[in-house]
Image 1 (cartoon, one colour):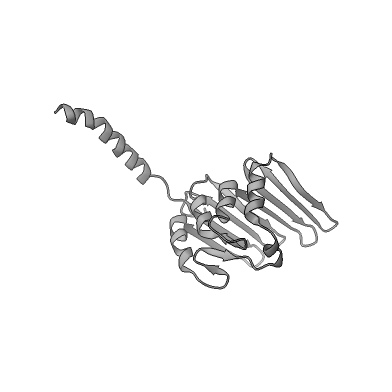
Image 2: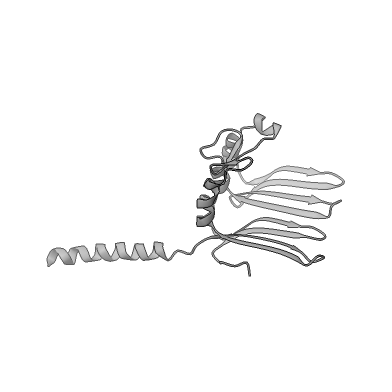
Length: 186
């Protein structure tokens, strides 16, 4: 009986931990593309756990075994892993700014995230990309120099809070890609 009394608190802690883990909300990847001019709307709401299992099963084009091959000439000359490691340890701030008559581009590290902001003045489009560092580093995990690990990035997304990853706003179309724990985009 005394052994049972001593083991009861441990059992309660283990049970509570199991309940907390089991009740943690599922994370969803949402994509919403809308065009008010044509009244077209595309909404995608995928549980990250599903995406994590499906991505390695797709072997089409440059996507193989959960990794996508970057086949750009610059990718063969740039080690993305080393650049991301250097950026992660660099202080926060604006790293690249390009201002041209038709475009503005800004690359920065803000609040522990890689931020890219592009304004296409001629096409009247704004593009914002925000990548949490854990996700950026997961993209280069267990890869060659010209690959991105999509499966590892999805696993890392499961651990980040609610975040908008990409927004594109144009004169006739908008795109938003984000992560949260809601099963719909409403």
